[in-house]
Length: 141
Ligand code: HEM
Image (tube, helix red, strand yellow):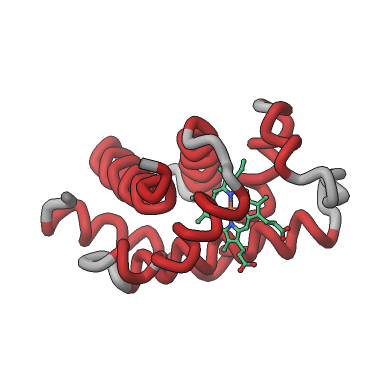
């Protein structure tokens, strides 16, 4: 669980990220698919070329879900319950991929807000994204 200070750090950076959520979402997916091309196998039905409409729309959905988790930081499990079932039962995404996407989201946030991305903010966001990933993969067990 996140400490009060970590929650505050997540909320503070989210306020900035939210203003550019679509661009950050798309960039995170571009980083995911170019650094870890095996993740593309989950999206055979997508046009994954850089800047494609599907990639941008999906990046926007992912960041929306992150925003819901930030708003419900004390009940991430409740906020993402439906998404958790989707990823586990329907999409069957291997849990290792959540680490990869989390890393790419971190990189995109860091690249855009370098001076806000202090070691403390980094650690708080890492922990937050790992909570989100745990919720989205816990139904597998
Ligand atoms: C769909 C969020 C991780 C693969 C979705 C949707 C959201 C979402 C909001 C749309 C659900 C809907 O349309 O109702 C997230 C979040 C993640 C995450 C917040 C972690 C931070 C992953 C990972 C993969 C993945 C790691 C695989 C590499 C997919 C696929 C779809 C999907 C294949 C369906 C796309 C489509 O056909 O429209 N995800 N996701 N997700 N996600 Fe994730």
